Image: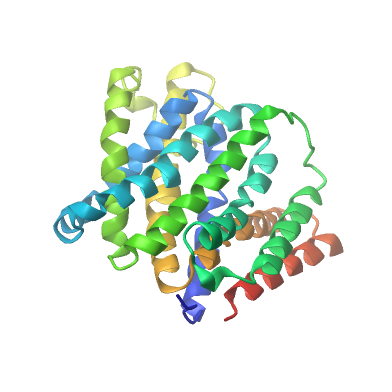
Length: 306
């Protein structure tokens, strides 16, 4: 298997997905104000299912049943299990810790790709992956308001989630890249969305929702229970629709057209986007930030080279 040429549009998609996924952790924090981790996992997958539904019938028609086993593996290792793991870890870890450990995804993608999926095109990419991870770590913890606290065995949850992402990405690249990315995504969330909706109804998660309590300021902490529940559901719906379904449309397209490792480097773009928005909001941008960003970009560039 050879590296495909990395085109400018692929870089645009890479940064766009990184920007979308960079909002995932804060949206989960908002969701946790009124929802349990299992409700968040089910809610985001249900929203992703509804968002990708228009492409479902084409996926059912064009993806043969013999490949559905790979769809299920990619679904549960790429969205199902990680959604639960990150939902729980967000209760006990800072978003910064979750974000850094999420940066292990390219490393797991590389190791699994080479040693399990026998993807020889990923060999000799270790330096680029490690440079990107080092840069992401430096960038996150060079921001003065981040503190390393709450470190416990819960750090194993985002690490496990990152390893699952590596399995899912390699599965899609190896066994499903011949199919349309929209159809693949819709099929993935068929196997996740129906169980998710079933759980939400069984757990009576919708019973207390007051339609009149919804507003556009979902990021604010609400003073009454009904408004906070509505705000949390809004945040998780946005997370599922954009941070899960739409972002995965782009991600699967990206790994189809390039390499699974280049697609996984989106996790290193997340802290750059976070830093950008901090700068827009008036936070100071120092030499350490620029040095860390340089590490990340050089690492991604090394991974993108043939």
